[in-house]
Length: 172
Image (cartoon, rainbow, N blue to C red; front, side):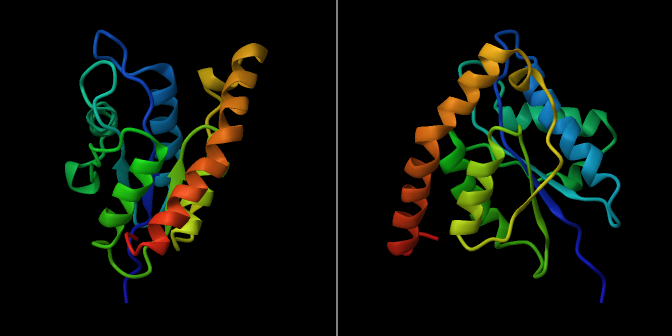
């Protein structure tokens, strides 16, 4: 029996006003590629994110980076509806149901964001693991680093409660 490819969920980040990917978005995709292309078979990629302040959708911008790096479109499964971490996780759960049994799930995002993302997937019943995170723009510079870390403090329990509530209501 052949092992199914791992699936790498890439959490969205901003698209710039001119429609180009932000450094954070690029860094997340590069981290996913760095891990996913070394796997046998190569990974399936699930870029997430709707249109934010500026088009295109974050998932579309990430898919373009993946394809420019040589990833065939058949290995990219976009999730273009998530507007935040919670809604992206919920939408990805629906997509994951269509993957072969035994598919390993990996998550690609920045180090500050990983604990929340992994917790949400695990609370939803998916044994997600991290892709080695990038040390991108959100991780550099002391004031910005603390901004992003502190932002996660209220977000972790809030989103965890939302996942548990959705699970209790049978939405997962």
